[in-house]
Image (cartoon, rainbow, N blue to C red):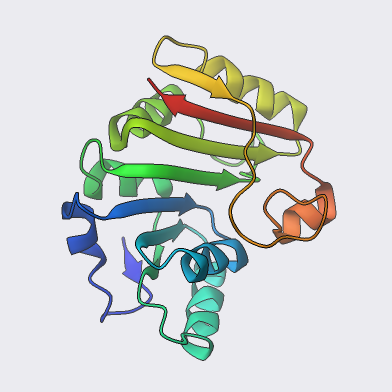
Length: 188
């Protein structure tokens, strides 16, 4: 199932418009980062996808309160792999953000061979996937999945948004747990 934050935002047409830059965050949580990215890059479209209905409703409320002319952002309540497989055309995304995905084996982890294959399909050539986690084991699992011919690791580049000193993305999870393990890869 897919719930959108705003019926007026034509996010489906964004997916088909290859002339516009498009970034996606899976698991946007508090939505703070994605909102900041959208505000600072008005020529880029941003879609946030989160499977947690609580975070989705909170993001919608925040966006409605602070819209201030931001028309390049929408939030969707859906599972990340489902959204990629069923909605995102091949070679469409410039960047995919995944910060602090749940590392718990009892939860359904988002990173799997199938997920990495989908990410590769939807990224443009040279497109980036940016990942931060506080779990060494999960980081190692993700790195193993990306250790293939189609990916190249990059040195972490800061986002072009204002952040407090020492922060990489400024999310509540980063404040609580720190950015211990970071990974930035590009599709080659």
